[in-house]
Length: 94
Image (cartoon, one colour):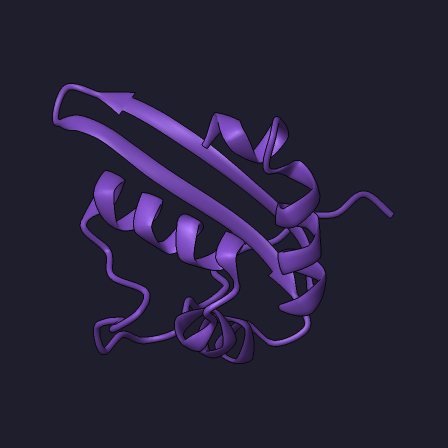
């Protein structure tokens, strides 16, 4: 993930714009049960962004999907059936 802020930053930005992702943050949570990778995304349409990423063959997206699979086991080329995230709470200062 460190490469996203370094040598792959420009390609990362291009990918996010193509997917219409306006904000993305990655967190590593260290716990007694092991490390957990948490992603936070804001985008126009999450399902559409996920679908576009799963079929993308752009070099950066290939690298990202391969890296994510190596790190977590999640295969975005063949994503598992899942329910889309449901917003449980949200705060913004007005």
